[in-house]
Length: 377
Length: 187
Ligand SMILES: Nc1nc2c(ncn2[C@@H]2O[C@H](COP(=O)(O)OP(=O)(O)OP(=O)(O)O)[C@@H](O)[C@H]2O)c(=O)[nH]1
Ligand SMILES: [Mg+2]
Image (cartoon, rainbow over all chains, first blue to last red; front, side, top):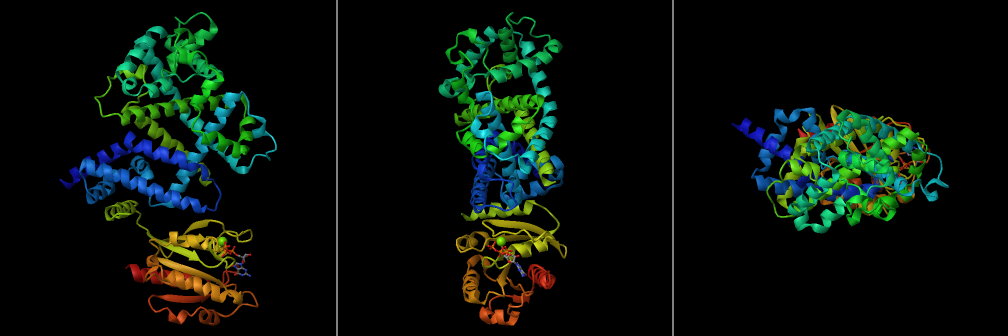
């Protein structure tokens, strides 16, 4: 009896730890606060206050959750210490919870997050300017050991995540293929769907999201990614003749969240212009941070072309996931609604299914683990 | 922080489920006393390149079947107001003194007596390391104890141990006292 109880409670807790109610505030917190966390041996005094804030956040979140579900602390403890909870995967799900009581663990999560953001910011800068501005490459001393290490970490992570990335891509391609519509038709569908779902109550948010333009670099990368898979899925034989439009067609196929070609006459996507691309840059802090941590410019420019390309691809993907998360958050803020029909969101909207979310979480954990291992060396 | 919340945190504490007993030790003392040197020598790390601590360091050391999490916080005057933030849930305080710096015995004694009054350190055992015994100019532990008025501390276990963080002499004796006292307290 008690065992059964523990089992469902544990299931519910794990579900909660994978849900947007938990994931979004926790990762928002980390993204906002991680920039002061570096890899120095010595800890800064400011870490302590941030850790305290984190404890409060987790207490509040878990407290609310427990109240909502109607379990008490003893039940929570029993469930989390039951034999079911002892598996490796579950232990990693609990990491952000345990980090409240374990400063070292918290610190390593924050350092990892910071590394992640800096690499993203770097590639965004690179993408916007075509190259890194002089201020980032000039006068900075040689690559430090740390940066060297971070490049290694990145490469490891890239390697590991590429598989999943590929899978995701081909899965979507397949999905798109099944829908089998031209991009124009899909656009129509998409606006319809938006009107009935997210756009209805959050017009500006939804518009911002979907009008996210594609920069040249990204487009090329995506086109390439799509191209690789094109023959396999035989989906783009109907693409427009001009190579440029062709790649756009493919791109919208591959990454549904990104808007279809210029032709559609939708103003916000009139071009992948520079200014617009700033709308997809992460919160202001990133760039500043990247400037401050200018040293990171070096390793990037020293990468081989294929490594750079990989980084670009990964960055585009990460940003896309990020956009989705934001959209999801918007969604959360609305009064609870019935779930959007299964097939619509896959093509149109930025929502992620529970399964995708889980996968995302898993991937993140994998990456985190990896980094942790590399950092520990 | 409300009672309920405190409860939740302590629940999370139990979640770790490690079989090892974990002990939180805070290492304090004036700047230049040798805290970081002591910490690194406990962790068997190189002590030749230590600079004044601006923030804090943490090392986990296995000893007597326990996991000692030792927190070394900078001792410069401007950092001392932050000491308070690190005292919660502390099982033991190590207070380090530069035995060759007689001029500052009073200052360090004052800091110690203020610490001892902190609510979070109520009844917490204190080990005082009379450090830098390798220096010819250092005072013996008994003199340090006198300079600090240690005999007035009646509300807790305490011990003064002569040592040299550089040579390692006396350090192990201090650790033995710590482990005996923790075991006595907790079991
Ligand atoms: N001769 C001698 N020198 C020592 C000993 N312990 C530490 N020192 C030296 O004292 C100086 C200060 O040591 P630290 O370990 O940095 O002192 P601290 O207490 O951490 O100082 P803050 O970080 O400023 O609070 C260094 O130059 C050490 O090499 C010792 O036992 N003998
Ligand atoms: Mg120090």
